[in-house]
Image 1 (cartoon, one colour):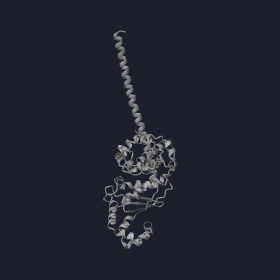
Image 2 (tube, rainbow, N blue to C red):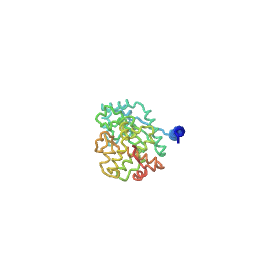
Image 3 (spheres, one colour):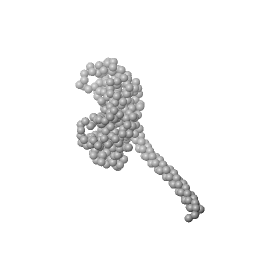
Image 4 (cartoon, helix red, strand yellow):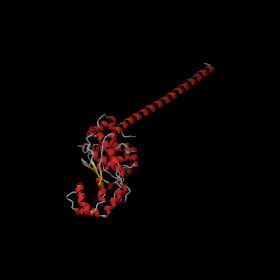
Length: 349
């Protein structure tokens, strides 16, 4: 083969390669546009579906009666006590002597607390709107839900019972939602105070009502406890769709970001240490109960948020619902082991 023939072949091959490269580039560009279009279409479909659901929820009739008993009591005098007891007997247990209420009506600290509550919550409109939206969402998923009469009170900052939900009555202790930096909270641990804000009210109310629908696990395993709270948080996903995920679980944005970034390592720790089916009584305080941090007994403990077991349980429940066609009511009754097995959960990397 002479040099001219070789050069000609090389030239033709070069042109073919260039045409192939151009073809591949055009094909790749087309595929990118196609895939991008498919993704946009799926997002639009999902948004429209969600929008349709929210439109249905918005049409659900819910009328709220909210009584600011904190204001009523805060403005009362000793002479008003008999009438208060007749009008609001639920707040005056018979076993308590009148001297208790008389003391509260005249106590300087109590009056300061009443004033602080009115300063943070001067009007009811925003709270009423938030509760109305929450109750509509609950009724959409549970049509037999009975809308309670709502009372707001003060409770000497009893943060252990911030919300009390009964069949026809909802009590919200507004003095436990004055803001994380409020002077009344100076002696309360920071991990508790961070959720003593007005924004936490709806999440706490949702928590109180979720307990009606989630079956208490018969097992005492760590997995069962994680999934119980995972179900609770999943209900919040449905009932409070506009609430940030961090607020649903009671985390700061930084704590939630840490949980996401370390999910794989957390899960590996649970699995490798055989904690899932353990009934060790110490596990709830280490990973489930509210705490300043979770207790892996590692150097990273101080970086972690408390209740990390609830976070993992939440991810397992969400994975289950993504991979199974089942009603919400069935999910709430499902046994932990079956739920976990069918969840196909894999931690995010």
